[in-house]
Length: 399
Image 1 (tube, rainbow, N blue to C red):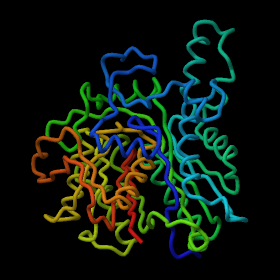
Image 2: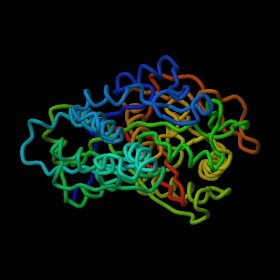
Image 3: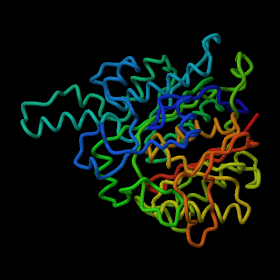
């Protein structure tokens, strides 16, 4: 059994950049990705801001090396997973057992929606090839095959905690000596289904979101993908480059409170964070930075804030929600924010929580509002709390 799991590579695409370098540059500039809808064909254009990847399907297809009829979800996944694998530099190591554990919540639904527009108008029309990739696993399988990650392929869909769960499942595969390398994370693209669904729940902000602010009114949906390359001790010893850090802790908990709402007292959030600390053998005081789940909804931020206060007492580490930049990317959020957490350790970064003005009533939590560089970041806690009470926390540690 492998005693430790390390991060050897990272890849990301989001509304603030098409790769790691561009994402870091956006944080440097304080440039958020939210804007009016331009790519998604919806009646909510000009009403609800979203955080779209700034590439058309045609541009994505060319960059990803996939047909333009491919689901946007699949193309975005390919971009980030390929970047992470290239960054890991594993080409010189032979005989590795490689797997792909990828999460998403919409699958190829963007193309299914194109099909049904034509089909509903005329049942003799509609291109069936558009619904071939509808289910979530299809996205994972195609990307895995293209990248040669075929020793194990899994798809996880647990709402907003999906790709965080993918990462710690990948770690368990390595620790139990089933694989040597796992590319793990997740992807989601914007669809009418998700936009309409969240709008029906009345948790979308018509302005740019304000995570952890007393006057927050909801979230902005986003799209993107984030992957980390997990490796074993054995692979680390053969690698011709330094690893980024260690995945030292992880935990998934469920408060079983409600289908879509977090428990007001943050029980699930607390259990996830405490469990991850226990796994890592750390105390709350050891955490240097929290990448908050921080969606900007009244319920979610209140629950997470309450859990943080319970766990950390009055000695809070630096914290921020990067969803103020990327929007809430749903199944991709845990993967994207895992990449940001890894980069925080490598570059000594604490990301700003844009648009924060007023602390939440009853909670004296003040997130970071300016980008901090050269910080001494040894341990990062990354939170991903989903529908159904499915709460996951990851801890990344310098090594």
